[in-house]
Length: 390
Image (cartoon, rainbow, N blue to C red; front, side, top):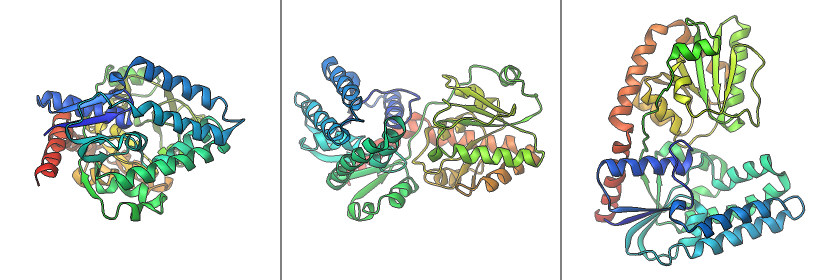
């Protein structure tokens, strides 16, 4: 087997998306001493290409208010030209090339290889995620044109890929629900389902230190959350669940990490906004349970990391969350978007705390047996070996 993984980005342990997926895969392959798969990422690009990409992105988007349609099309055009030469001088004698963005696939799809594999890492089709990002950061008019050009990119990539790879069947839920054409586009595609994995999350501070720092009583029941403060992440659902519990005199604390944007935290001493941190493990470890309330999700990295800490999890019954819940009784589901049902699940664990240790133990065992980088890499190798020789 000789393969190439291409990603126009950097490999980072905790950035999420393709960056962390590939960081953990590369780590697993190295631990297995398997070196037949090469990685071509932004670290391998010349500085001139990287710097030009960033300059053009900033320059064009700054003009978005004045010329939204032109900016969207020019950005896509220059992206194409910059990427077109990346593989020219690279050995193309691969059994497969695995792409991790629709835009990467479209610009480099003419490469000479047996299988072109595509994985996208957003919980909804990339063009819809890009539309939301541009609307929040720039303006809605520019977002409309970006959606238009990026949708063409997605259609092109998914239509022309030989193989699709996703972590689980449930991970595709957001695509079927929000992209009407998706069913027809992939109806004849072969899809490999390869659950990912991650390095164990470390906790730098002891739980009592964290609780003391934020004036949380040592016997208080604490719920943790890590991530963007966004509707698609269900941040507002968690807020409503907190208010519902407090209104019924249930004294639960909420320990929240992540930048307060675009949504703000609740004005209550029991709702603690930590902000961005490079040590989310300490805050999760200082809590009794972790809540993952996403409205849409692919296969969340943070859920794997929480498993590694041996913490019980309450998650929305959506996407990849459902796959995890099938594997461990330490992951329980609530009705997606239903803050009362979420509050009821929190209350169940609040009232029966004696089950928390057992739930956490089951999650830790699931991590050790299934979700380490080595287990992930082994699944990846086996799936591609079967593809190439099956």
